[in-house]
Amino acid sequence: MDLQAFFKMSYGLYVVSSSDGENRSGCVVNTLTQITAEPPKLMVAVNKDNFTTDIIRKAGYFTGTAFGVGTDMLQIGHFGFKSGRDFDKFGDISFAVDENGMPYPTEHMVARFSCKVEQELDVGTHILFVGEVTGAEKMVDEEPMTYAYYHQVKKGKTPKNASSYQPEAPKAKGWRCTVCGYEYQGEELPADFVCPICGVGADMFEKIK
Ligand SMILES: Cc1cc2nc3c(=O)[nH]c(=O)nc-3n(C[C@H](O)[C@H](O)[C@H](O)COP(=O)(O)O)c2cc1C
Image 1 (cartoon, protein in one colour):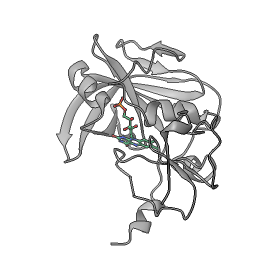
Image 2 (cartoon, rainbow, N blue to C red):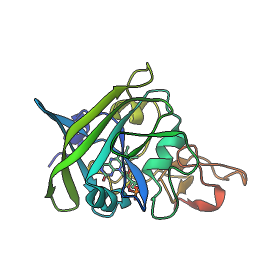
Image 3 (tube, protein in one colour):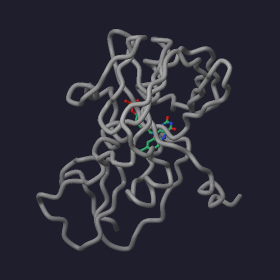
Image 4 (cartoon, helix red, strand yellow):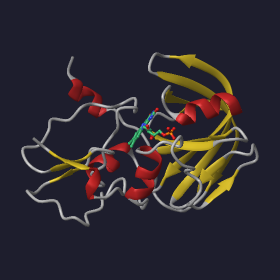
């Protein structure tokens, strides 16, 4: 199988978030897609290990919010490389709550789609949620970020839990972030270095052997 073929697939980049009244979280996904127009329905594949999956299952609702091209990489890292099991992802960011009581991030987000879960399908590593759109809103007037833009312009990485994950060949020299996989090229890593993708410090980097 030619794994390079999968890089020719096009996607957008979103946060899918939910709250069950007790817990709230959200994760980055590239798998949110509109599947019907009348009535409007979306589907999204969320890894069984993601905290967001547990919450969506309990709540029966999720909200998909599209990143704009101006989104800071740390915001993507916040939702895409950390788990809501460890901290409240909505604790220190700007967010709003939709008509279903679901929280969604607002900074640099261009549109949101609030959904009621209609069906879920176990597809192995992921759960495929089908949701009917109960509300949609255009937010900031900015271009949406595509998955290709995230990789090519923002130099973003994709973690193991993503549907589209592919392991990368390690580079010859440098340091690798153990949280998000970002690679720093250089013999010595400055002690005050902060990962430009997920925001952790130099102590979370390992030398590439
Ligand atoms: C670019 C990118 C795309 C991703 N796409 C998906 C996806 O489609 N499905 C998924 O389950 N996880 C995806 N992830 C991984 C989750 O966002 C990540 O595992 C997150 O930390 C889970 O957080 P949670 O445990 O709070 O739910 C993606 C991450 C990134 C950075």
